Length: 258
Image (cartoon, rainbow, N blue to C red; front, side):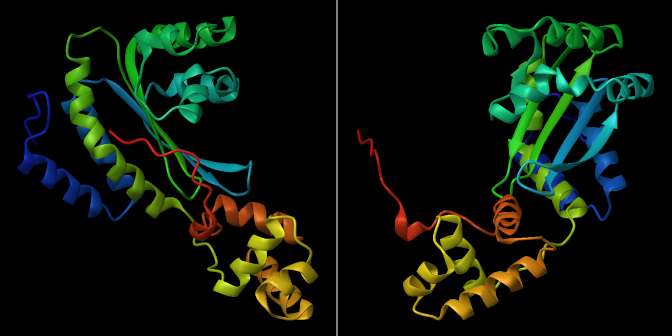
């Protein structure tokens, strides 16, 4: 086991950990590795929530966890996620969320949100931090790290975990994301122009092809992604990262120079 007592990982240890993460062949292996990291960073509990999009506003949730089982059962049975400020903030922010500093990030913490945090403390998770992370494919992750007793090394722990979080997140996404059908360049182009509000006829004029060909490619994209119509196909492929901003049509609004 690595000695991670210093404020940040030594270079060799960091490279070794990254290699270990990359070589994880299963979700169980990755979960075991997260458990090791949490223990070495002096946390009692952890939970990595991975939101994988199944549509524009729908997600499948996968959970890597070492938290009290009765807490997990109570949390999900009672849908506490709806009022959990750590989840709400994680979707809005990219910075670490130190639990003791919640009032600095959320000026008006609701009574329900405060009750969720108080309940966490009752279950042995009095102090902690949450690290949000997001991908260009619409994946969202949040790593909760907690312990029963306050410590003076919270920022040191942040230095240990933060460099590894992108690798943990990417590996978790690789292991758990179902394969998504790849669209052809022409299918993406047709979906792009429809997403811009163009009709099939207008898209055909822009692309220099026939309206029939545009509809052929749109129907192919709909069929590949298991959608019911072109609008659902747009939403699903935006969520999956297959439709991205057109780099040739950027509107540069500001450049700051020193």
